[in-house]
Length: 376
Image 1: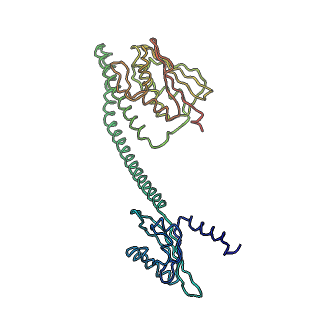
Image 2 (image 1 turned 30 degrees about the vertical axis):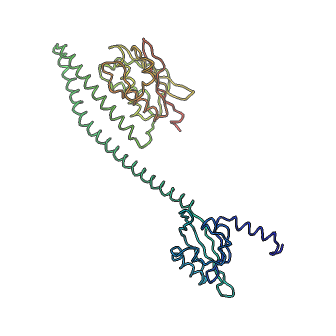
């Protein structure tokens, strides 16, 4: 097909005019010899009127002064590439990439070709990414600062707890010794008051442990430490954590031959202790609390049911039993942390704790310690 073919020329012109970039040719006298339709959109100038017009008149004195070094470079035979903000009609400002390509014939520069491509959208995306990166950096910095504060707070709580717990433990040991001497001397009434004082100390120690547990769970940055744990040892340690006067109330029913379970011993000890303490607290004095240990094949899990002989609780309380601050109707109901901590510990293990039955004759809470995910 000949270059003079009218149809070819039509399509060539159509193609050039559809390109969103400005395309033009300026001769060595800086006069326009060709311009595509994009100039009308960028500068509001009809391309027919632009032909024969000086580039100085098109750009205006300010923009021409900025572009002149590149124009002179192109007329010197050197290709020019640079970025520029090009003003347009209505005050629009277009970020653009300009390219001046020298037209050289027999070593003589006849003029230069111009291609100017808009970068506004790209610049906006780059700016949005930059802001996002800055925000992410600020968030990461803030998160790191919060982590440091949480760690410092936890360390301070542990130091404070040690300073408080040690004297309380010493006082408890002294009271236990005094109680034995009083019983030997026939001072039963005084001995009972010492027992009551020991119970109060036990409640204070439990509150300290629960407060530390909440702080630790909230600030915990790492995953839990899972180990094969002997089930009987775990339960014995938990019962030993309870006040001496309450330990004989716990009845353990072993309905499985499974010896070990995968868990974080320190955390699961806290979970079971809080569930047991709750059962003892809401049962009549001297009544039994039953711990039933069984297993499940589907799902693969160890099942621990804790059943009290208390009066049960309302459906309203059941719905929020494991939330922070939930408390039953009891004179020593505490701060509502015990069962909340138990749920948090179970969730860290990918396991569950819930109510499987409550009535006037008692309530059963079930800890389901899943093993399939834990052992992988």
